[in-house]
Length: 155
Image: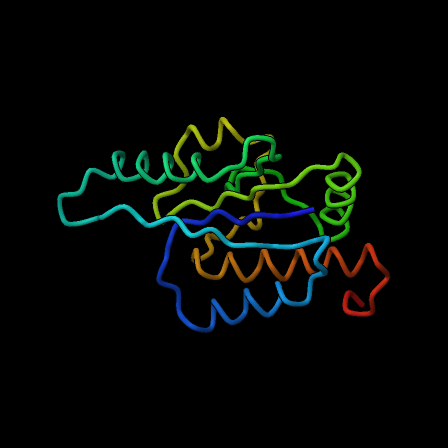
């Protein structure tokens, strides 16, 4: 199974890149996590934010493989405990699905990305900085994998 994190933003601090890749390296090849970075549309003083979101949405939709299950990270999505996330991962694997996770830019996801999604997932009721979301997602997917495989990390 392959999980593709499609996220807006290309210039992340080193600690974000290091944290994300640390958890990716821990995952086995049959449960890989890869990152596809989408360039953030320009936002200036008089920028058309709706146009910027549409441009990012176009790029995100183009990056989704045709048969992937799509899960959009969205504040109004469903929250999962780690155990529930592990159950979701088991379901994805049983169904033979590869998964694309969508993380929007600072102004959110394009509506078409939410419509394309099979599920909406909320990491928290808190507003999280987009760089931190990458690390949290990688860690939680690794934690779910350890739970499924009775690895001591989850304890």
